[in-house]
Amino acid sequence: MKLPGQDAIARQADEHLVTHRVKLPRKVVEHPFRQVARRVFMALFLLVATSLIVYADHDGYNDNSDGSVDLLDALYYATVTLSTTGYGDITPVSDAARLTNILVITPMRVLFLIILVGTTLEVLTERTREEWRLNRWRSTLRDHTVVIGFGTKGRSAIQTVCATGLKKEQVVVVDPSSKVIDAATADGYAGIIGDATRSDVLMRAEVHRARKIIIATQRDDTAVLVTLTARQLNKGAKIVAAVREEENAPLLKQSGADAVITSASAAGRLLGLSVLSPAAGMVMEDLIQQGSGLDIVERPVIKAEVGKRPKETDDLVVSVVRGHRVLGYDDAAVGTLELTDRLITIVRATPGTQIAPDVRPLRQD
Image 1 (cartoon, rainbow, N blue to C red):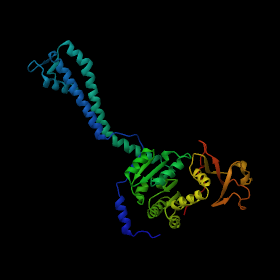
Image 2: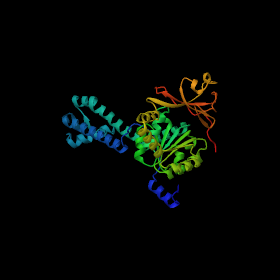
Image 3: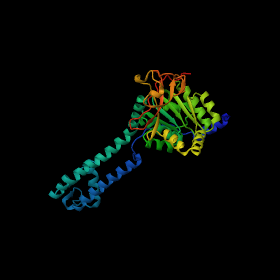
Image 4: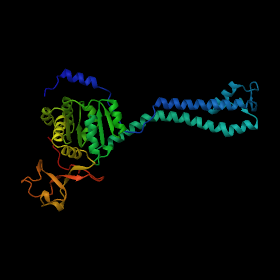
């Protein structure tokens, strides 16, 4: 694989460079300007309604200046009354006007103040609330999963992981597109808008404290740069990357990826298998879709299985993970199961089926 030159990398960064920011999942909130405009409209409506009420009963009011109350006087009285200024130059003198003030205008005054004070407080505290929420999110985020690239590959990967029990609160998505991040937050994931080849963007995703990193970028050279940066920030995380071309897989592993999936080759093999045996293709597709039909699950060996052969367990064992080796169920090197082994089995998917967490020591190189 031939990586682009420095100029090409800089040009690509300029094309995707945006002000990186964190977006946490939340309910759809109206734009602040619309909130203010809506509340101002409500306050004006109350002002106009109060003015009309006063003008409709203008004979019950007395103006100290000329004795009569016209429409302008009614608007003036409503303004100073609702704002609690109360100059006292226009006062209700009849019983009906005073009763209207008690039952109608006073509740309107309280509602008017609530609208104005509530709008002011919300506008002033919105940013503080958001900053507090981000700080709390960062302080509690540990051993999470970072997904870089939320296209078809990234979305499918995290859906598969979440189907095995991972909470959405433990997932952070990184993508340069704000629309993609909006889609991720709508699904319940936290999102970071920015170029994942930049270390400061990955730091905002708390990559240095992540347990697993999924790299599903659109370009192989981008995947290499992201893998190098992520491995530099986190020596112990498990990094799984996807590439389009099989010839680039060794370069990803040299960059620090623990596992590399060749998307084009994997799809081609599944196509070839489906041509040879459509039923076998259906079974393979079912196996890679967690949560339905048959699931392929990795789990630790239980005490009752120690000393047994893989065929003697209750589950259908296809492989045994011993140390850093993956052995077939019929491999003579397996012998009998040990307590430190892990089994890769095929089980019927149930709501409680989960992939056991990886407790093996992670690579430190």
